[in-house]
Amino acid sequence: MTDGLRGMQGSTQPGAQVITRGPEASRLMRMILILNREVEKQLGRELTVNSTDLDVMQHLMQSGPLSPSTLAKRLGISTAAVTVAIDRLVNLGHVSRQPHPTDRRRLLVVPTPDSSRRAMENLLPMIREVDALMSLYTEGEQKAITDYLAKTVDILERKIARSASTAENR
View (cartoon, rainbow, N blue to C red):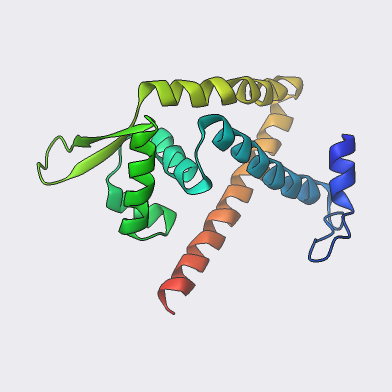
């Protein structure tokens, strides 16, 4: 564990949660989630975008071109708010609006090649390094790691779905 992680685990600042309790794997997963947010903040600074803009870009890079209404739904924000984010991203050269290929009334938001390249140049070294870790483990260990991660993803997705359902019922 690095000194930075060691310093974070026992934080006693008001409102801070101590994350040293529970199984080591759970504690480390929480650290991954915290550190992932930091990586996202750094990427946002690199691309000169705020967190909402970065969320829009992440959805576009994962899913390809999306309509503004789909982005708004995925982000849980209004179409007006997503339009403001798209306008900022267009002005920064990160996305463009293009006509939908089959519905002339609709537009799609498309990440620009340069912006996608910049984001991937920033992230690929880390992604490759994390991917290379798997080669250090036996096939059985890799299956166990993958199983743990897949089940963790499922838990997080169910939590998000429950929260979304609760919000809709308010």
